[in-house]
Image (cartoon, rainbow, N blue to C red; front, side, top):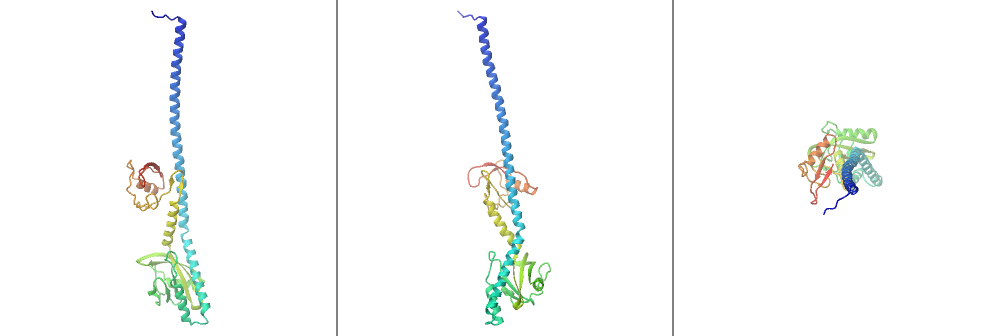
Length: 304
């Protein structure tokens, strides 16, 4: 026989059921709101993190660009300092040898002693050498091309029509020493002239000019190698690094140093290096991609 509930009991049970349902509904609503808030916060935090990483990447990249531009701007100053010091060193050697032997040696013997002392000296990775020219244009010492010694080069012109020896003689006659800019061939690269700067100084005992010069592009290349070595040591954040390459796609630093990456493609079909070059040529910008495998089996999302 079924038990009959009174009005009071029915009302009580109804209220309990209603309360349970309300709690469940409110709980579900709260959970859904919290989940929605969590997802929004997750998206916001992710966006903030990405923007922070972009700002960090931009800052680090700009610092490297500023450093590179500064170093390149110093190329000519650095070159001039080197050749000025070297010429003055050679002049000091010649002066010392002259003073040491002038009472016991003939002028011809003194000249040979000075020439023999300066001939083997090299600097700047064996590129730098000394030359001596008489004021009538006769080459006394040409350490890099001895076959030119004894020849009169007074009428020699560079590819721009400058009378190189005449101009050098004029500088030393008028000022005693000075810099001179001209174009000159490199050893084993005949037919091609390169910008060169020389520093020359008057050696009064024999009316010689003693000098040395250096190619500007060689100094720039030296600076580039120094800059690349520094770039390879730069790390920031958790796993940030700086990379550099040429317009043709050749990678100059890690993680693919020495490899041509122009056609490298990530898993989403992004031509990474082509996109990087495109962004760089347009003034700069960000490129997102999936980092390909180099020295491990791991791929990960990256931004440059």
